[in-house]
Image (tube, rainbow, N blue to C red; front, side):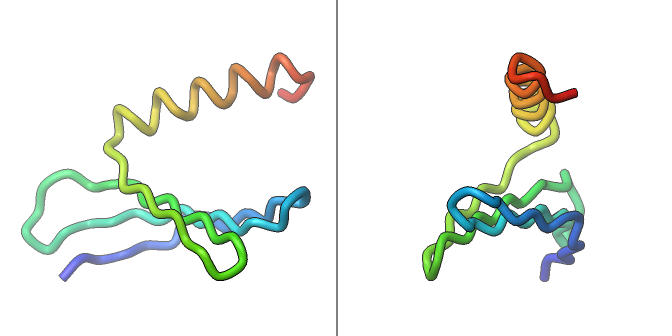
Length: 71
């Protein structure tokens, strides 16, 4: 059984999506994963990503936000 730890919940003002970030730790051990759950009305999109992918994604999003004047 996997242990799920809630990390963050974000409400998107434009579009009304709910984004949840969770850490997934499997009972067998091994790598922890970051679960990204995006809820749009009744539909869910779920990604389980490894730490290296999370770093790349975070850096790309930060870089884009900075071009929009957000720091």
